[in-house]
Structures are given as structure tokens and as C-alpha cells.
Image (cartoon, rainbow, N blue to C red):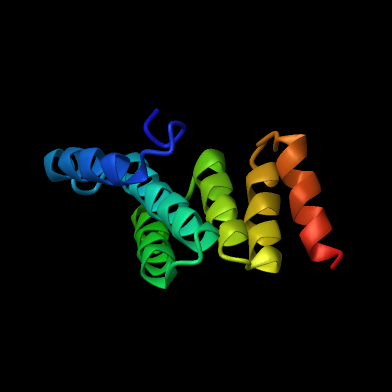
Length: 119
């Protein structure tokens, strides 16, 4: 909910609190990664340095992958983070993995990703 409201710092704070209660929960870790990716997008869109946020997100997604297989929505979140970071081919790779698991990607995201890949 906080991510939808673009309250990314609050989302990170709340998710970190949840993580202290269940430090190896892949859902919580993935949500935290997504929040860091969203914060990276926000900072980047305001012409501020965002690398640390994207790097934090990637480290967390990799941690989830070590715990077990990523679920389709977690792969989609990772795809969005990669898209925000300008890594369009990697974003497409994660999106395709999510689709193979049955994820129905939003048409708007697929269109935006394809337009970036066509450039």
C-alpha cells in the first residue's frame, strides 16, 4: 500500500520492521527489494543519485533466490526494478520467467518495456 502511495521510505521502514520478526521470509525480503527499486526510480526521476537503492534491491532479490525459487510476482517486481534502472533486456528476461510461471503481465508495462527495447 505504501508503495502505491509512493511513500517508499516509509515502505522500507515498515518492511524492515517486519523483517526483524521473520528475517528469512522471501515475501518480506522481496517486498523490501521492490521498495528499494521504487525509491531508486523516484530518485533517478528527480535527477538524483539512485545507484545505492538499485544495488540494495538487487542484493535482496538475490537473497530471495538463494532461499528458494522466486514466485511469479517476485520475478515481476524484479523486472520492474530492472526497468526503472534502464536494464531493459534483463527486465524482459525476468518478465518472461514470470510469464512462464503463469503471470499475466499488465499490458501497459509490456508496451513500455517493448518500446524501450525497440530504441
